[in-house]
Structures are given as structure tokens and as C-alpha cells.
Length: 424
Image 1 (cartoon, rainbow, N blue to C red):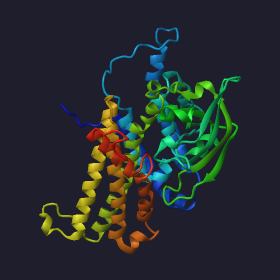
Image 2 (image 1 turned 180 degrees about the horizontal axis):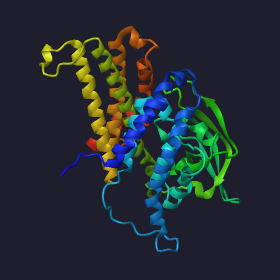
Image 3 (image 1 turned 180 degrees about the vertical axis):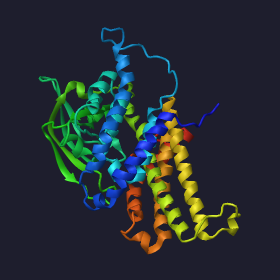
Image 4 (image 1 turned 60 degrees about the vertical axis):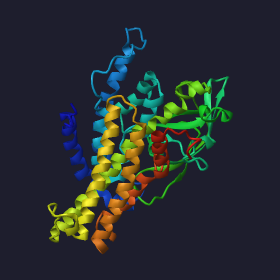
């Protein structure tokens, strides 16, 4: 039997997150949008204890698997006793925080995409070693560095290199990465982590691309540029330069082998990061869409405009039809996001659904927020309201974690059974 009941612990969590969104985010939205790169201190201080507790719960099962038979060996993989609701809890949290303010949400003291990469490509030992720090001490951030000036959607063009120093048994990273969310927070301002994708053998193609954990305050890492953005302006977005950055051999996630067989645990394993990050981006888009939709409906209601759902479509006003279309797009995006997340919770592959929900949510939120600005007229276009900010914040969801066009390709290849070479 299909059960759509939300677990009690998630409902309880949502009450706390809603309070954070209303009290620690919305009141500072305009100020932090104007003062780009200013850290949202109130939000960080309020959420750090909560994210610490989340990480503790998430690491418990990994630590149990490592306890094994008491001699440090990994225990055999156990059968799943039921759904893993941690992914669902995170998706609900992201949606609510993005309703509060998407830019501030991206400053959440949490491993974020860096943590997702460690979980996707790292061993259980690496997961505990790199993620346990997010349960201790002062606020910390995680980041992931993939995109380069000449390698965006096509990761095979990656130029950042990782060379093994046989004498010291360290990896030496050289290159540049751009558009890194929380890059400065992770590497300059905290004992955080940044998962950097680099090639150990350019001739090996994708099989030679590996993921490396660069820890905060590592020598040789510098901020090349802080981005000035259209939206999510509170978010820390930077370019990073790696100049002979030395990291321990064990900071490589997975195997150093560059054979095609190994690539399934290397590049392809790291690519599974997107199967969990795309639903997260979709959830953020849905949160922004809900903020714009709720505000528009409430504002129109004050002017006496209320949608009559009992009328046939031809009898509705243009405004009523627009509101109903906004609601339909919002709900379809949210349902697709929950579907992709439910598959993660049940341990099923969600590659197709992750791209579907990310594509649909990105398209929906850009349309919904733009329509909200149009419907509210000059007031919607002014900075007196947050509607124009939501429209600017929305567009990034159509771009990062794979553009709309890239996700369309992934969906088409998955449904039609085509390879990358057959469908470009």
C-alpha cells in the first residue's frame, strides 16, 4: 500500500525550520541582497546546532557498519529494514529554508554538495573522517568544485590536474575552478572541506577524473574572484585557484585506478552526487515558487480578487487562469521532487527522476516568479517587495547542477535508451 504520510519527526522538524525561515531569514532578505557576500550571521547561529544534530544522526549508521566485529573491519552490508527518511527530511528542510531566503539557505553550515560527493564516492571510513567534523566545534561548510572556465557541462574537458608525488605519497593539485558555492566559507573561513574534481590522466578521458577532498586552510588554495550575481546574492560564490596544493593520498575518494572498470567507482560514482543534489536544487526552486505564489494570492485577495475553482475554464478571468496555472506548475514540480527523493529513501536508482524534477522545478520557478512580478505590476517590479528578488533568485535553479538543456538530454537518453554518443 502506498503511504503518503509524512513521518512525525519531519513534521516536528518543519515547525522549527518554519520559525527559522520566518524569524532569521525573511527579515534580513533585503539587507543581505543589497550587501552581497555578507555572512547571514543570525541564520548561521540559529541553524548550526540543528545541522550538527542532523549530521550526528546521519553518521550513526555509517559508524555502526565500521564497528564490524570489533577489530575495525567493516561489517557485512545488512538488508534494509525500511526507508531511509534522512533524504526526505533534508528535502523538506531545503524547501522551507528557500521559502525563507534561497541565498541565505546556501550559506547553511553543512557539508552540502561536498558532503554529497563524499557519501557518493567515498568509503565508509572517509565518510566518517571528513563529515564528523560537522558535528563538532564552530560552524563549518562544505563545497564542491567541478566547473572550470573551459569545462562547464562537458566535464571531459577538465584541465585541473592531480599528480602523485611518489616521494611524499601526496597528490599535487593545479588548476582553477569557478562558480563554487560556499568555496570561501569552506576553505578560508572554517575547517571545512571542498571536493575538487581533477584528472590524474588526461589520456584516460572520464576514467581519469577523480574526486579529491581539500580541507580548509590548505596551503596553495586562493580565492581568485568573488562573483557578483543576479540573484542568491547572500550566497558565497567564488573562483578558486590551486597552485601546487598538496593533499594526503587518502584524500582521494575511491580508487586511483584509471581503467574503465574503475571509472564506475570513480567518475561515474562521483556523478551519482547529482542524483541526490538535483532533487535538492528542485526543492529549493519549489520553495521560492511557493513564496511567490503565496504572496501573490494573498496580495490579490486584499484587492478582492479570489480564484473561484468551481467555474469552468472559459468562465475564469485571465488572472484566475494564471493563478491556477501557477499552482499546477508548482505542485507538479513538488510531486516530481518527492518522487525522486522517495526513490533515494528506498535505495533505488533515481537518475531519470532526479533530472526530471530538476528540469521541471527550474522551469516552473522561473515562470511562476516572472508571472508574479507581472501580475503585481509596478509594485512587483519595485524593491519595496521581495517579489522581484524571488524572480532573480529563481533563475539559478534553471542553470546550476546541470542546465535545463543538459537535464533534458539525460531524460531523453534514459527514456529512449541512447548513449551520449548517439544523442547529443
